[in-house]
Length: 210
Image 1 (cartoon, one colour):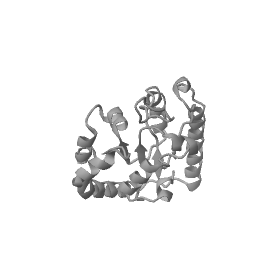
Image 2 (cartoon, helix red, strand yellow):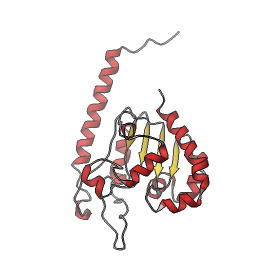
Image 3 (cartoon, one colour):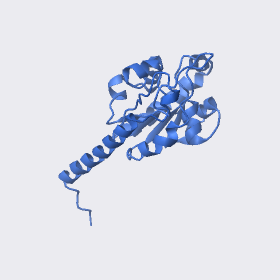
Image 4 (cartoon, one colour):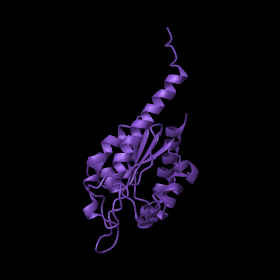
């Protein structure tokens, strides 16, 4: 006997309730001041999420341009990541399909010798699990860079994991951080473009398909 379809009104009500719960959580996230003492530009959590998203991008932490605009990956690293994905900005920022939750939600500042500081260690333990509980439809998570990979998979080599990406499917797809520094490695590693990127685009398409 086939199950009775859920009335459309009930589905809308469920969406409304889920959205309301997520909205409440986001208000708490945006009011967070746990790391305020250590943030040179002050707290400004940056994330894009919807309960209906199917692809999760787990990055590092916002840079200065992202902090200024409040738009994740709104910089050169984002351009490189979108090129890897073969994805335009309209799809990338469609929160109904793609969720973006970095390991650190706020800009952490700059190291004395240059380069951004690591994500604040308080952030992911405080918020990540609670946020992911509101993303029940995620089919694939892109672990972008060492901080995301180490938090989820344990310590290991970023580039080694990237080249062994098949071992982490269908749940995770490890990627290097898409900064300019990765460009040299990418040029030295033709297998990344020949093997990893085509597989990445196939897996992303699979995750997003209806």
